Image: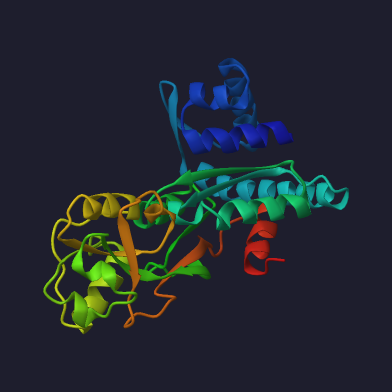
Length: 293
């Protein structure tokens, strides 16, 4: 038994297909098949049930996979620590994020992280909305995400990192555009558009609107860019939106603070699986986000 066999076994267990696993391992399919057969022979147990080129773990294979994964993760972390000691920490971090922090916060954070730990770390960033980002984090597509807090997620850690203000937006010819600040009393009776109530920010807006006896209109919009464009195109409409970079492209859009709403209305969090394996690069990134320079 050798390390290559264990890495081959782990990859095959993950993708459950000989051809796909061999391609990702940059080896031939016969090499992979022979390696797994030798491993099974040495252990004296069947690790996979075969269905042509597709496979699935046997009960013995599931138990062995848990121990192999733990051992290889520990080995990979040891290698990362050794590299860190000679200032060459490397690896890849898969990040999912809401787009609202990509204008200033996230680029500055990544630049500062690389300045401290070097440029050998690859940080892949993908954009999305909070709910699918959290779902993909749970499925393992991402290692961390920046998103809104979602309730009933006991296996996830949420760390607040920044907040956004809720503002009223309208065309600059709208009667309310002449005021420097508005209240929910001013907004009563207006056609108010905002986010879908099934989203985290949509629920927050709906609750504060209900608390001030203000009704929201349909349809709803998922992001500030869409909301801003729809409001700018309708001179009688008013939107309740987060004050983010998504509103900046609209030249004829008036953005007004709302006196009844705290400036830190909506919080964006760093989110990660509490007990999942974390590479040294990821551990350092999480610590860096929690305690930036």
